[in-house]
Image (cartoon, rainbow, N blue to C red; front, side, top):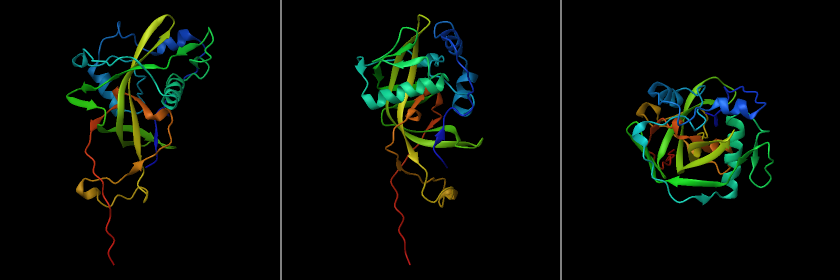
Length: 223
């Protein structure tokens, strides 16, 4: 398996903030849809932006004090918005944002945990999420590790939009490629997470499919 290709199915051409605003549902106006929420976690072509309505049981969300995001993680967040909304021209760095662009601030509010349809995700949880494999239309489940959960606010057309994300690390493909020697026992082998950060390390919590259990394993080679 390759690394997940999070937004392969998107094909937006954004020319104005009005079009950007039309992409997201207002958290105050939209009603939670269970079928839509389930689809976000099952169908990689039904990509969430992170601002779609969450299950009512999630609220109230207990948030920590607002903090400044570290520089490397902020760069991932900025790139996430540009890829997810399909617009590199409208989202700009907080240090040099122009008046006609969307200001992506570097302040976030972390949360200790979030309950999604009976599953409790928290910092340190191991999970799987469905994405398309690179250069393919095949759906695959990729394992990851949640470093922290957080909310981030941006303003589009004078409307404040709340996005709810997980900052994660992805386990890299097993060195033997697609061969999984223990698959018959219900066990998949993966290598340690990659240390190279990019926008795919930020995912909407809507994309978390399920919790998983992991353990370290080392083959013993005998002659």
